[in-house]
Length: 65
Ligand SMILES: [Zn+2]
Image 1 (cartoon, rainbow, N blue to C red):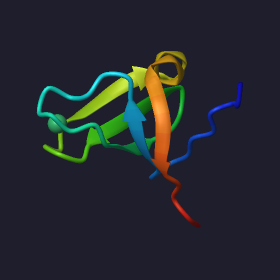
Image 2 (cartoon, rainbow, N blue to C red):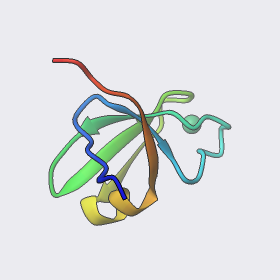
Image 3 (cartoon, rainbow, N blue to C red):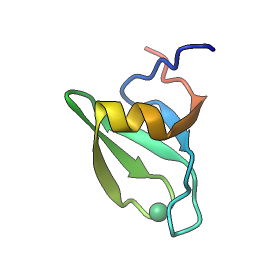
Image 4 (spheres, rainbow, N blue to C red):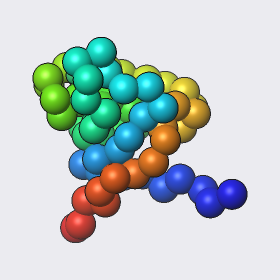
């Protein structure tokens, strides 16, 4: 299985969509914890990196340097 590589500012899809109906999240902070922001309503959540890696479904858009 392909390893999921994610970086700051990537847009990702999670296994569960946000209650607002959007399933597009932007990675706004990387570290021990990862903060993602819902592109639909602007709500942000922080997840431990391990949990984030388990809940991510796929990367929709890679941020280009
Ligand atoms: Zn939302």
